Length: 271
Image (cartoon, helix red, strand yellow):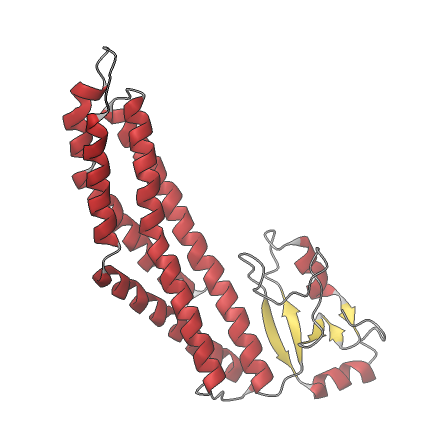
């Protein structure tokens, strides 16, 4: 992830830790309090204690889906999208020397939709976390597991949620970077782009092939209106695959012509 993605992930991790703190404060003391009842050897004819757990978690769900919390998530999402936009503008300025105008209605609609999508993803983090916690706690209590065991299971679930938040940050960073690059490069008049991978062991084999393939325009160079194909045979752009870290470098028609004149192309190969 780039710095913006790292900062986005840090905010999501802070949210996960806050939810965990509320679970530790309000759910685990209740589990310990109810332990003598649900761990007894006698046949339990009712799960009366389960209502207490469900009500406690429902209270947390209400708290973490409140308008105040949703507004905070919307702010985080909006800041992330705007920071990504500014980075994309800087990148195009650096690579092509072009100042980009991002105030057009199409771009503003895209930014609004991206912010809304990320706000929903942020909202899903505590919702999914608490739903999984309820399932985990009730299942283990019904199995007669001691509070210490349940606490350990909750710690593992915390780790799962942390990783999910990180995947959201990483995936959205890649997707938005790629989509902004396409919109701004095309808006600036670039018909071509060069697919550049991260040049490490985590690069997908197909993405490495695309980056190194010599086309009619040059090495790893394609047209925005004639994209390369994924391993499933579908048109694909840098950053569009799940957690893809590839980027698109703008390529001018002049550069393509220079490649063709110098014999650095493969005539007839377009993708």
